[in-house]
Amino acid sequence: MKPSFFERLTGTISLKNRASDFEEEIAIEAVPRESSFAAWDQGEPAEGELGVDVYQTNDAIVIQAMVAGVASEDLSVSVTREMVTIKGKREAPKGILSENYFYQELYWGAFSRTILLPAEVETEEVEATERRGLLTIKLPKIDKGRVQSIKIKSV
Image (tube, rainbow, N blue to C red):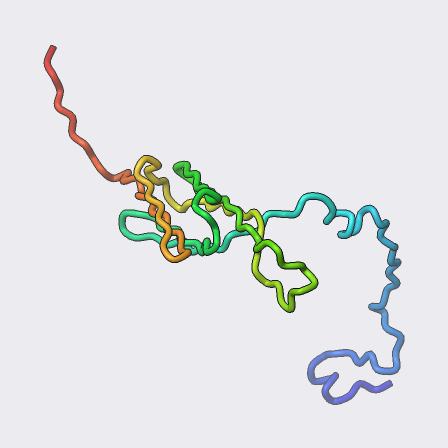
């Protein structure tokens, strides 16, 4: 079979009317039921992941998260020099049967989020506030360039 003008120009090979050399048979195995997602999903419900915004100012790292509907006693924030963990639980409304919902898109239950910080922070000076459902955590950066002069006492 003579190659076409396009095949000669580009150096390609037409696979039209040819058996493909690139086909291969792949055996598909049935996945045993115990290793399927249905078996994996059983047990304790997974925690939701809290969405956050993290940004920096000249002297601090700021984390913001929407925690509307979460009581302050159901919210905890733990801080190390390199990491912040926010945990909480949003209680579902009581007395509404699941078959009465048309849409159920809100997340109810436990949630958490661990954020690795881009700079070390001063854990003693962290401030956390909540206003209108917005949690704001201000983490002052450690000033590694600060030099402190010390007076030497003569003994």
